[in-house]
Image (cartoon, rainbow, N blue to C red; front, top):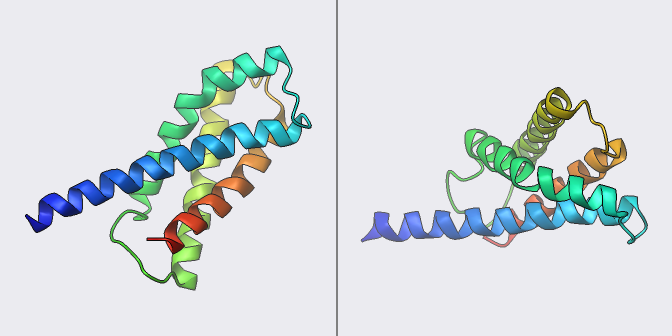
Length: 128
């Protein structure tokens, strides 16, 4: 019963992280375009949306951000969050650039998304 509850908790945390990452990706576009996203960039946002979220969730898993439920985070946990967000963002940019040469992408969105990812994941870890 305990392992069953643990798996359900991890799935809930994965879902929350996916929602926060999605909000960060969309929020980065909103901030970049002053809350008025052009139609061309909106289609690019939608195309890259599942890819960016999926890559980051996988990287978060491999950086041990889901290894347990934390009541309090430490500097070590913060460093893991920064490491995971950086690797996830760099991998997303690299793979997207190989596929599209970043045509149609505002480059500053990736930096804003990285900042929002760190902030969102840090907040998510504090509430567990």
